[in-house]
Length: 417
Image 1: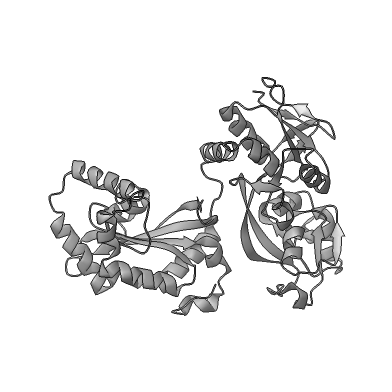
Image 2 (image 1 turned 180 degrees about the vertical axis):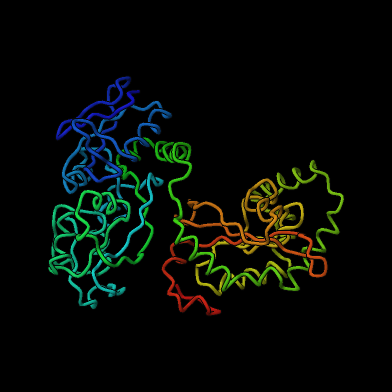
């Protein structure tokens, strides 16, 4: 496996030479995911693919083409895939998107406080975009009218400064890289979060029909090569902290919740670690079986029903709620989590053993089943009279919905993000 990818403009460059028919992948230059450095192609997605295909021992080659042609060639069977792409309707008929290689944070940028409304056709704002970009595809799919199309992000910044457009949608990291090359007076005055967007490889359905095992194997290696692709910034963590404090902080003091934890602690007072592992393994097995005595005992608990009601009230903002005892074993859950024992994970251990009584905020994680990003926020459950930590409550929060919530909704009891 070569350690570098050398730029191939309109011509294929084999990266591995073991096989006679390497995979043919197309791309375009979109920093920081695909970057041209002289005659070399690099960038985060390029490096990720090198790791993935090396692990798969798979030959491949990459061509750099204009984006629309890169996509068109896959639709015509002239290439096996294109990257880095967000989910798009125009590719769904002939290709399938892989697990994410990268995470983008899309923001609206403007020089005034207005933001395009959900119904783009009624916004009244003049929008610009980079021709063929993922953002323009998304805008058109969601009913926005794009008034001016250009070839570079730099051109968008100049149009915004001259008042030719009112706003544009761009990836935060990509724009920041561009702004390091531009004068200060080109910086947009206002930015407002729109959504998280994952970028992956669209592999042709023809390839996947020939090799049914290919995409599952590729996706497994994605999560090996890219264990964490998103990091919350300080202002995002502060916003999530405020949301948690306003809406969910008091749940851990609910008498029904505290009583359920105390009862299970009493029942599990002398539970050895070997038995904890055995119960955890039983939970895993039961997820594949028709009879589920352990899972059912947790899911039918009155507290589990209450947790499910709380989750439903927040319309997708919460992905799961888990309440544990002092060992980290599930007392009640709003969904069926993967594990019965949370005791070996930071989302239990950090708040349970913390010196300060404050919530623990985990890393940004990708849920393959929902194809959305979440953050686990967990806090201690305490015995009311003594203040002793007796368990933990864990909330999975959909970070995209949380960041899109208006500040006025933080104080509400029912959320419509």
